[in-house]
Length: 347
Image 1 (cartoon, rainbow, N blue to C red):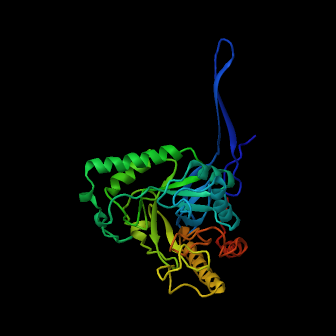
Image 2: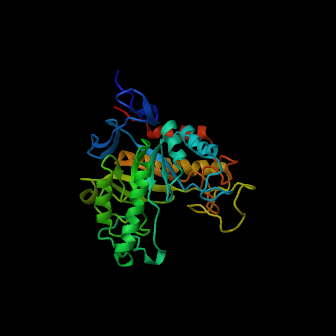
Image 3: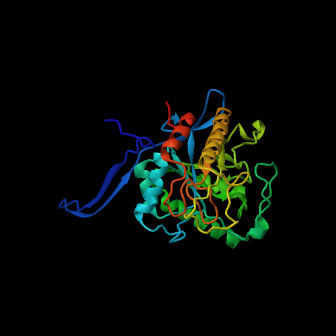
């Protein structure tokens, strides 16, 4: 029989049992049990010549949320296994096929549930360095700067060691499809070297060298952030030959749920011109952002990342409140809005 490949719609997993057997007697001395998923990542040009992600040879549009993984009772520590499952299952029910795990490495149970339920993962490296040592954030502008002067050889080796440890820890999870070494120039240094090493470290996955910039011509992806509605600075000469074009952050439409905020303060915020006054206005703003993304998809954009899964303290731009008690935009409404993006891989 032909093996069944792993996809977000059909997350087929195979149990694996590896035994150490004494040849003379045939006795099993030791055994290890695990699982695996069979899938192949790639990229290919569509009929207009734009590079697209492929999964098992079929083009697929990546669409998910930015997920910072904060919790009111544990900060970066999930309270329970079920709590992690809740967030992932909501994203699946809402019609997303991907999540960008932002500046955090989760417990491996998180990735197991993404494997099991079928959710692509873009995994960020945890940013490093002090803000005053970061280079100027110039997004996709040509001739960007690196913060090389702030990173001596010892610091750089530590950064690479931590990146390598992250890849080694998570390498065998089929859900992970993109590694993201840098974000918005935070701690960005020696970018070309880091990008080449990242490609060599895992040639089976895509490298998004710097989500939101600063863009250097290495890896597989060029990524722009734009709030509140998605946008992209198309540049055929610089980007179209070698790079998949994505919008790595957009949206961030906030909404204040009374009684479910980290604190009621004037510092609470979301992107756009003030917080929506009604849930209907929140839906309209979300629909507008997705309409923009549909247009960008037709122009060559291959992925979009909406900010964000849940509120995070005074950031009120989650689809779910920080305490996970209130879903601001229902899974059914989101599914209806997302249908126009046509997210399934198509042969």
